[in-house]
Length: 191
Ligand code: ADP
Image 1: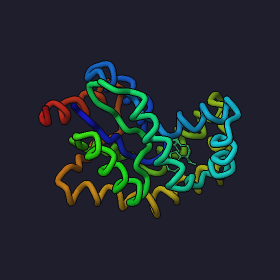
Image 2 (image 1 turned 180 degrees about the vertical axis):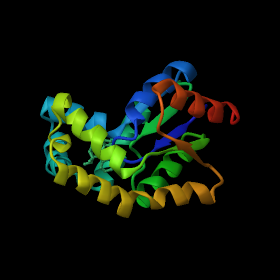
Image 3 (image 1 turned 135 degrees about the horizontal axis):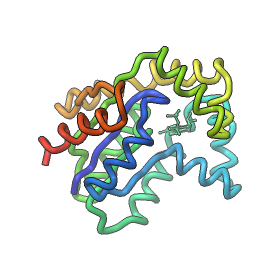
Image 4 (image 1 turned 90 degrees about the vertical axis):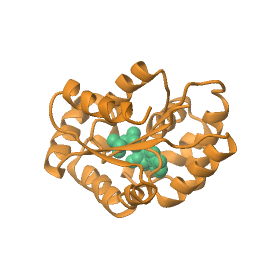
C-alpha cells in the first residue's frame, strides 16, 4: 500500500492536489473536512455536533474525527492506499493514525507538506468564499482564526513526522501543474 499524508494550512491547495494524486497513484481520498461537510449536508448527529466547531474555524474534538476516519478506512477494503487530507491535525490524531495503520498491517509512507505564506492563504480563501458557500471562508476574522489554530495546534504534527524521517516540505506556490510535479517527484522517490 501507499499511504500519504497531505499537510498544510487552510487554503494551501490540499483538495486540488489530492484529486491529481488520487488519479496518478489510484488512492482513496480521506478528507476529514469533506467527510464532515457530507455529514452536515445529510443532517446526521455527527454533522450537527461538528457544525458549531467548523463554523467558527475551530477543531472538531479528536475522538469524533478519529472515529470517523476509522470507519472510512474500514469501509474501503482492498484499496491501493489512502491519501489523508486535513488529517491528522493534532498530535493525538497523528498517534491514532499510526495505530489505525498498524492495526491494518500497514503504515504512513510519507508526508507532503505544502508551504504557502499567510498573505497568499488569506487571498485564496477570501476568493474561494465567493463561490464555495462555506461559512468559514466568508470573513477575514474566521479565516484568521483557522490560520491561528493551524499555527498553534497543527504545526506540531509536521515535527511528529519529521522525527520519523517522513517530512517533505514542498513549495505550494506556482501553477497547479508545477506544484503537482513537485509532489509527484517526491512520491516517486518513496515507491
Ligand atoms: P480547511 O483546510 O480549508 O480549513 P477543511 O475542509 O480541511 O478546511 O476543514 C474544515 C473544518 O472542518 C475545520 O476548520 C475543522 O473545524 C473541521 N476539521 C476538518 N478536519 C479536521 C480534523 N482533522 N480535526 C479537527 N477538525 C477538523
